[in-house]
Image (cartoon, rainbow over all chains, first blue to last red; front, side, top):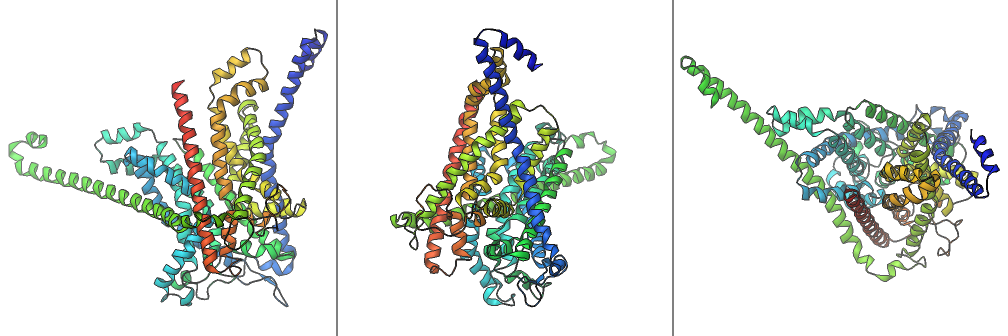
Amino acid sequence: MENAIDDTLQEKSPSTLSTQRKYVGDSVARGIFMACAILVIIIIVGVFLFVGISGLSTFSDPHARNFFTSTNWNPQGTPVASFGALGFILGTVVTTIISVLIATPLSFGMALFMTELTPKWLENILRPLLEIFTGMPSVIIGFLAIIVLIPWIGTIAAPLSPYPGEAGSGWATAIIVLIVMILPTIISISIDALRAVPNSVREASLALGSTRWQMMRKAVLPAASTGLATAVVLGMTRGIGEALAVSMVLGGSTNIPQKLFSLGAFFQPNINMTLPIVLYFGNASGTERNSYFLLGFILLVVSFLFVCFSRYLASRSVYR
Amino acid sequence: MSTQQQVSPGTDAQGRTQLAALERIVKRLHGSNNVASVLLWLITGLITLFFVAIVVYLLVQGVPYLLNPDFYLANGGTGDVGQQIFNTLYILVLTEIILVPISLAAAIYLIEYAPKGPLVSIIHFAAETLSGIPSIVLGLFGALIFVSELHMGFSRLAGALTLLCLNFPIALRLFEDALSSVPNELREGSLALGTTKWHMIRTVVLPSALPGIVTGIVLSAGKIIAEAAALIYTMGTANPANVVTLNPLIGGDTLTVHVWYLKTIGAGFEPPSVANAVSAGASALLIILLFLINIVARMLGNFIQRRATAA
């Protein structure tokens, strides 16, 4: 088809030559744009492939077989190195889940307030504040936690901790830092979900004689439930990958607390999955280096699953 | 009241109990409504107060250092961050130079050229997945590919390429929004005049989408300035003797990386008072920058909206 047009063009006057050049330019431009768009796919496949291969080659070292079964992390150990990463994984699971559990009701509360109750002038103050905190550099929160939160918690929780001098570092502080990091994310996505519920739903509920709270609880929240779940999932995605701020306040090295099932476990130096990557990756080599890639690969796969789950939720939601 | 009138006189007592029951229900509902409202006000108030307190505290701690000209010196002495400021601006410009053309081109393809089909959904899915990846993992990827495999070493180029991977999906979405806000009539008018598609995009779509594109650039700038985890193992944490060059192959630390470094692995190298002073100053500077970015983006957004409603 295109060839036919080109042929007829070639037989005609020189002015058609410029037209032809334009068509060539158009298809070249199209090709370049397409290549740029496909670059996204290349990047994501590359990340999975290279981080995955480096990470999984950890298991070629027989000493690393205990990666998922042991908490003994001693990559340079003599005579036998040990790569038990269960402690790191446990740290991430505990801090993420608890911070999401605390942050979710608070976020929903604030999101409800901002969609249903806020006067206009207040919203004009709260929105920019939320946006700034969504993009807040994590090191700033980490720095603030170090100079304010750690001494403060250290004083309060000293009697609970087995190491009273270091009671400020650990899971408890990390959870508070994570809450500050994920609150703005969950709030702003929840606001979008609640805004997506059409006003007719609210009006129908109010017309049936319900109070504002009944309207929110019985009509708006259920209608927005999938969107709100997406918000929580994306908040968790942000939580598990949060590295710098958390590594600044955890203060641990490689070991989980001796007495894990006690309140004191929250108030002593501790670990999570991003901490060893941040602190030790730079000087690592061989199997140890690969094992940090494996930790990264686990984070990658989990966040991928979260994204898939949030997409599934979004596809089920009635209002978008 | 109406309930009372409808009740026949013989069952007056029964009516009264019914009325009392109704009143109880109403009282309970209004009570719970009030409790809920107060609770929502309280939650929002506390969160807001908390956030405002954080910002105010950081500014109060940091601004005194910002007023001291020594803070901006770039000779690598203790307590000045001139080098880090230069590195931050350098990496910001370098990343935007790579990021904007590529993500704009990708957005143009998705909005203007691509037929609706599996390719577009795959690209969107890939972008969404990429935006969910923790930045530390992309830092590992950058350290593996750009620093080791492509032999760039700890360099600004490796850092910028890693930030490209990190910010690509965000920039893509913002640019897509900008392009799709251009009304279709403009496109049809241009094509009806016999222009090619690329000519139409250059002369009609891009100029009309410009405010949205600039908003996208400004917002991605905020992300680039705030990023640290992806840069630690791609740009390194140490500065060479002279950072004030345009050489993209030297390493260096940005403001955010510097704050992290001073408070963790570099904690012993400078006295804590100096480290705290530098961190506080840098944090205040970053917050002020982010405020400015937010204000600029908001003004552009208002401008777009005004124009859209005026048209």
